[in-house]
Image 1 (tube, rainbow, N blue to C red):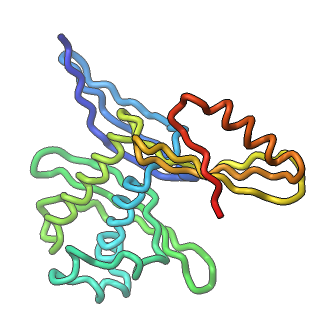
Image 2: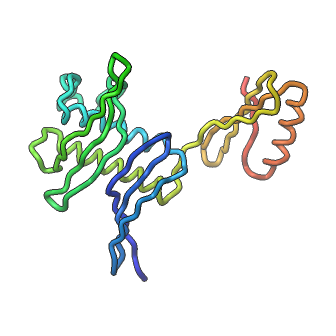
Length: 213
């Protein structure tokens, strides 16, 4: 039986979706696959990308690097770097020469955006946080793998307009999976009827409609 092993080479986030380039390794071939995904990214994937902000700041020698030290990096408060965004990373090299290039942006006080590309950094470089860098890239690739091959997606609020009057919000919850989302129903006189119709449609699906007060 042929076993396929996939290795993430590049991942970027745009509009809550992920584009991934990965190597598909089989017993006989190595194929490079570029995939634009339509699924909304999971919060865990976004969190793993956000963790890379500390390395972008350090490697690009940004002023906020003074906040980061060996004493703080393990539990660093990422909210201190809210004006930074990680848009992607690219893995290159092999063995002891393997490393990563981090791509991101910084929102300036003027409202303009500064594009940042950290220099390619090997995991075995003299970079003082190289061990943490390797671990954080590994976590990113794990979450991308879960997203790409194991359907680990997020849920985004969806809106249905029945007319332009009052709003009612109901909550979709799946007790078995713990996945939550919102449906916004717009309407007035027909609102109750629409909710009853939705309950009928979802009956037996395991999803429960709960009014949000």
